[in-house]
Image (cartoon, rainbow, N blue to C red; front, side):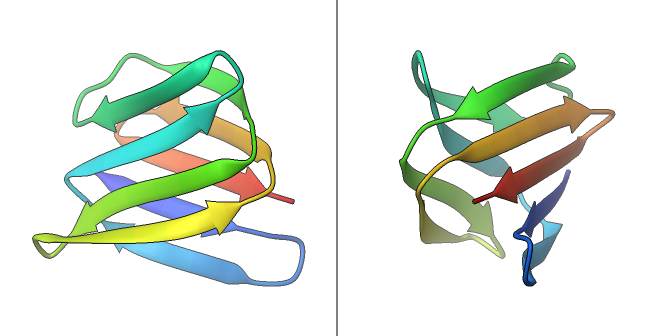
Length: 77
């Protein structure tokens, strides 16, 4: 699946990943390939994704996520 992490200033990451763990306002959740479509508000915390078999962590102060058709779009503030 494709992950896009963007801020108002820059594209933080765009590429293929096997999983994404996000800090939702109601708790942490993980998105895998073929996940159901969703839109969620993100709380401050860590986004962890696995790209090329390696986990990568990005700290955020909040944002929004849209999951649709194996594309995970994260807009952070």
